[in-house]
Amino acid sequence: MKGLTLPYEGKIRVTKLYGTLPPKGFAYAAGKHSGIDLVGVNSKQVRAIAAGTVIRSGYDPSGWGN
Image 1 (cartoon, rainbow, N blue to C red):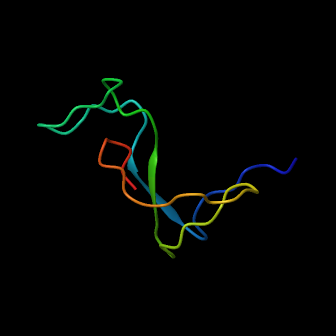
Image 2: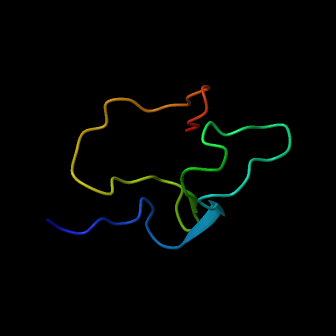
């Protein structure tokens, strides 16, 4: 199996680190941020990090974001 790649081509910027506390007025179900948020610097187009099929894409208002 090939290794995973980043979901953006080119440079990325980390916008929220794992384990950080929520902004004032917000809450995380786990108490702390349970992931790493990234944004593409060179490209905003998200690409697959492994083989598969996208079955849903969109915003989840229950807390999972985009």
